[in-house]
Image 1 (cartoon, rainbow, N blue to C red):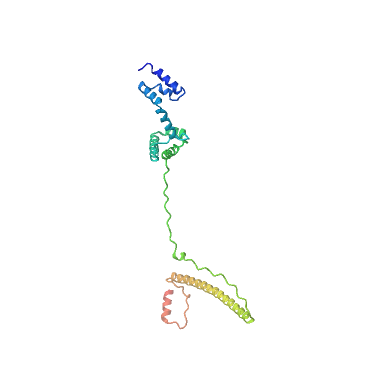
Image 2: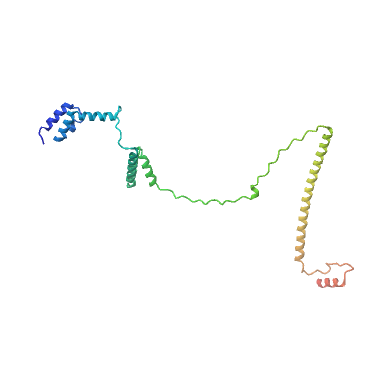
Length: 239
């Protein structure tokens, strides 16, 4: 190695300016690299390259990203998958400590939340039997016809019409009263018939229960025109 390398580097640094951020890097160069850098600076090629880079950056010192949107999205998905696999290998204690440190970090919170949901035990779903569906009766589904609103009676225009309307009103009241009385009579008749039928059933049951019982002498009287056969039959039953 040339022993004068540092001397030439200091001389070159003095020409470029000791405050140049690249000055420490020049000290790390070998002889060939140092000479090549010196030639590029002397020829102005390095300056032109810096001007081209500055022009590419624009007025806001922006460095365009050489990657396309598809490459950036692919890199994001790949890094997310790698991070999710890393979370999958952690123990519960390690994951809890990692979640406390990075649970609110942008870009990681969503993946940590997904891993936490995976580790959280899920309750066993309870299957509730579906209630039995009872079909309503077809008649119940029929919509009753709406009752038309009562119409106000038309005021009579003449005395004859007023008299006729009064007669019609009295006739309707009389028919309604007769219908009400008939309904009451029908209910009373049905009640009496039911009572008599019940009495007949009790009498028939009593007669059937005492059908074969012996008769007490003198408890049966016959008419004067009773036949001898009837008298003998009754007498034999009493004995």
